[in-house]
Amino acid sequence: MFKRKGKSKMKKGQMTIFIILGIVLVVVALLVFLINIRNPLSGINSVKNPEAFLQGCISPAIKEISTKLKQTGGNLNPEEFIEFEMNKEKQNLTYLCYTNISYVPCRIQEPMLIQKIKKEIEEELSKSVENCFEELKENFEGQGYTVEVGEGQEIKVELLSKKISVQIDKRFSSLKQGGGFNENVFNFQEQDYLYDLAIVAQEIISQEANYCNFEQLGFSSIYPEFEIKKIRTSNLDTIYVVTSKKSSQEFKFVTRSCVIPPGF
Image 1 (tube, helix red, strand yellow):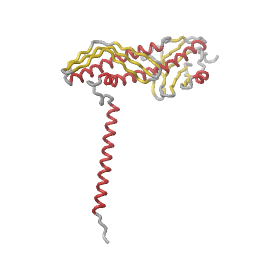
Image 2: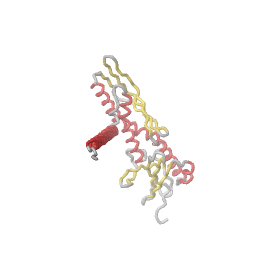
Image 3: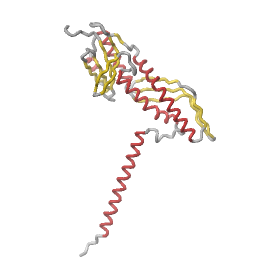
Image 4: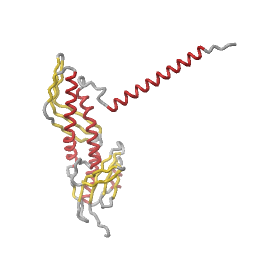
């Protein structure tokens, strides 16, 4: 008996083609996914949804500013700080409570820490907001709209538990035959634990200023959602790293309080 090999070869050829097509589709899908990650605005129609476009444009700037504030102790340009290498990276950590007198409790440097952080975000975010509105304007004009953008803007930041709320007051109007868009207030929210971490930092410096020490064990038993690490430097400063266990976000700062000189 003779076996027919033609159909078998044909089936194998078809299978090979299907496998190749499957691989190509997976590669294309992966490329699209990576493009969207690198450019979150690629899938947003700025004309149909200007607010979503602005949020996608401004959101990375909010995250970047928040990350910097967490790494430096809530101050982007601190006057009193130490340079400390952590995880092979040098960082300027802000003194949130400081004294240069031995045996004396530290003095809180930022009694209004939350307000200070809000102001830092508002000032640092200003340039990014202007650039995003300019990009939005160009997109509208590219589709035939006549656009007017108000000069200047007012940025209001609210730090809330597990989020940052941003309100931008800026006039933006567009006109085209058959329709247009007109808005003066834009609201965004970004999930972030900056407020929660800063509240813990406030409690730490309050105890340092009043009692020369932070009662870590007692605090951790009441608020187990935070991990607090204390690092004593050779200069007798104390570096605090406060971590939100749920988000893994960290807030770092330094104190110098009730220092006992070497030899005593």
